Image (tube, rainbow, N blue to C red; front, top):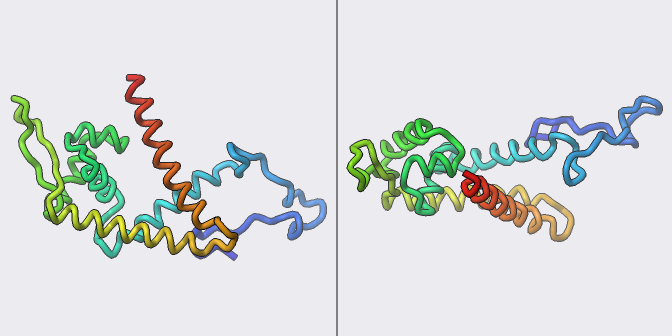
Length: 178
């Protein structure tokens, strides 16, 4: 029967596979001993859970990502694009929607280039970002609470913090290599 969260049917195990079928043979493993692709799929399913957590706040995942970067003080569109690993036109399109909602304000940049702009969160944008953070954190904590082994809930949530640190370190390394 498929998992209700991921929609994936469990793989046969040695105890459920018939003799001589090979279905119970362990698959080759990827980094960390996981099945190939299983970490990627887990990350994709996790992203979907973040999207579902954002629904009550009426934000999309791309909008949430941009608000989060703005909340950390990044204001120049090219820097936002670099941080999110997207192209600048993508940032512009997302900011258009956020500006229409009154969450972001565009301002003329300080350079002589008339195309230069900065983006800042409005007070409403800061409040919505805070509500979104609480909603997503609650959704992920609710899911992690389903783990039954002692310490697994905390380990699952801590692993997200480690991934955030890893991504930031990776980004800094990539920028330094330029």
